[in-house]
Image (cartoon, rainbow, N blue to C red; front, side):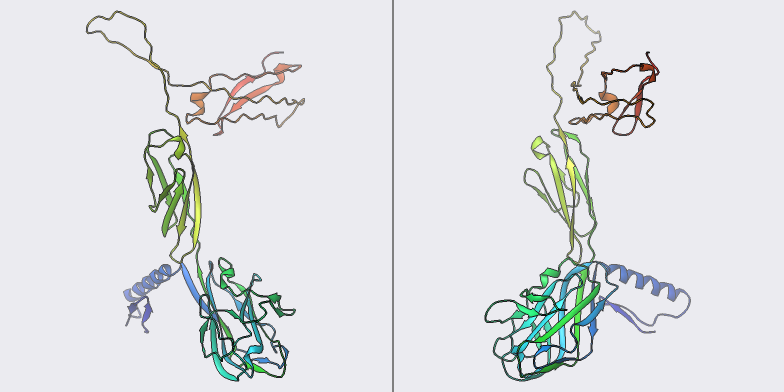
Length: 383
């Protein structure tokens, strides 16, 4: 059996039956999981492209269909093999993504001397191609040497006038679909070819799916516990200039200035990022002034002290609404309550409803809390 290599982990001479098969299967699964967050695949169209003395190439565009890739694009490189031309300066060469983004790879480069058998690769950040001298086979950055600094025209079905030479317009795009290479000779008298076709290498990464949560709401002076998941590295930001690289940071001595939206950005192994947020509410601590009346207490007697820590809050909805006769679905009137961490059962002490109706016994009135629980206020009462 052939050995299996991935990240310098090798299995050799695995038995073909019995326990050996189980061990081999487990190893393959582990390798697949460890490399799932990033992927790099090269696709090709090796068909020859003939370049006339003037005008569009014989295959215009030359297509490559990309399929089966997951995630979003992080880097792309494009290569042509067997490039030959009697005046390379005539050539405009452009790649178009499935989403319609265009990158001008080569325009007005390489001077007027003959070149044959050249293999060119373009990637973001590569050195620019020479303007007047022949360019050797190698890796370059997309280059437009147009002396007039205007856009180059790739006529229909090409994208028209294009001047962009940056691959970064592809960042975050989906990789799958038809990629197109447009080649055109924009002058006369000289011709050429790309005998070995072209290749595209795409690297993708899987976007993380972060979560963010906290133990909000909480009182002033307490400690906030933030939690996140999603893998990779973490970068928290929040109110009052808060930052943290911990997955689950804490914030001590919480105040109103530290309340608000906390954001975590999670970066996966392949460099892809995604964010999540959580809103933190800080409630004011209860306050009060103790008072007591003079009292006589015998030595050894028990004294009971009591305090009421609730603050009264009234919320209302003063909008009028009609109550239709014999309405099966009912009518809803909402009141929004905020600024408290107590539960509804602790809060509600009284409900006042101003109703005018010709026959009150027809009415069924319920109070429903935000958590869905409800109590019956009145049913079949009155006349």
